[in-house]
Length: 254
Image 1 (tube, rainbow, N blue to C red):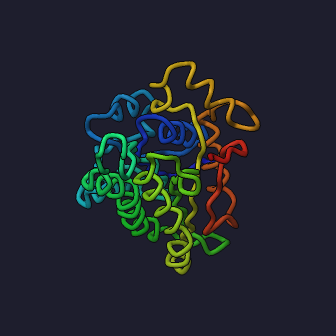
Image 2 (cartoon, rainbow, N blue to C red):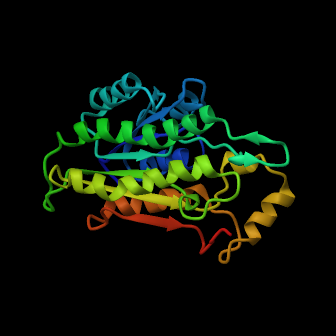
């Protein structure tokens, strides 16, 4: 149960983020759902009821994130959990020798800015509000959960920017946990494999089936709520700290 827990979830309008918002609310918590102004965030928040507030947020904007954190404090009085699911991707080889083209530097910067810098931006500002909580019996105040990818370890051809951005999130995990230990704030990262999210739903059925068969067991795409279930486990288990947890059905991409 997550009764009384207040969360701030980025990328909360769809996919893994939406599943996380839904689970926190279903388990008795309240959430500030952060996503782009152009997203379905406002309608998702209304659909889930008064325990969810929508904050239009570009995670790379200090002002936007500060407003979301303030909304959390004003609406729910505190913040216990920050879950960062916002992220983007692109697929380009660093040098396409068949076409004679090189990877766009602007695209590389954009992926790292949103995925890595954006995660850092939200985590640092969330930590300020989480620190206002009273220490519990374990000397803890709350937890930050970031989202990487198994591409951080086994990036595919064309994933140089995405893999670099997710590797950055993995690399931040332990030092961030050490930085915030004295404040009573845990930090963990989830590295998902192939999940049935809007990104993969754009692929045709043949490709989706091929991807599902590449997963050893169970041979299917992950359900977003299984990601959210792991989020809940991290929230409720105080000893999980400074850890990167893969959730991928034993998939190792080659």
